[in-house]
Length: 115
Image 1 (cartoon, helix red, strand yellow):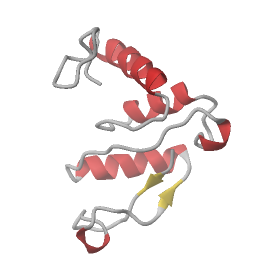
Image 2 (cartoon, rainbow, N blue to C red):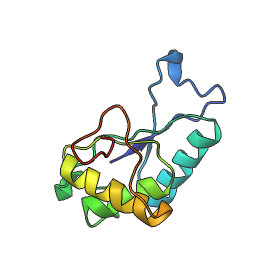
Image 3 (cartoon, rainbow, N blue to C red):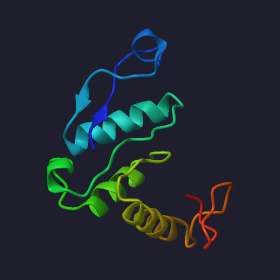
Image 4 (spheres, one colour):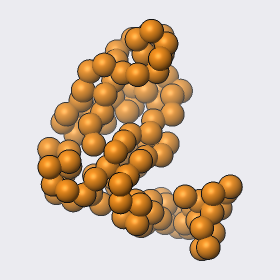
């Protein structure tokens, strides 16, 4: 996944459409861009994570590694074409961070995890 981030103080993106205009391509740039958005109290939902190597970020060796890194940087959620992998990584991340899986919510599957 790529991170696109417009550096504007109003945090609304160009024209207030919420879209962003420039791309962060290294892990360091991606982490900084996410941190800047979070510092502006924005929710960050990167998309679309895919497991084919051509779609992985340039420094990631697997989809699991990429999603886990983005979660560790504080993203609020994410979109993936591989929901089985996304749910697995999210649950493992939550268990490492909190000792429990995610809390159930409106969009629960049979296991009670929020999707």
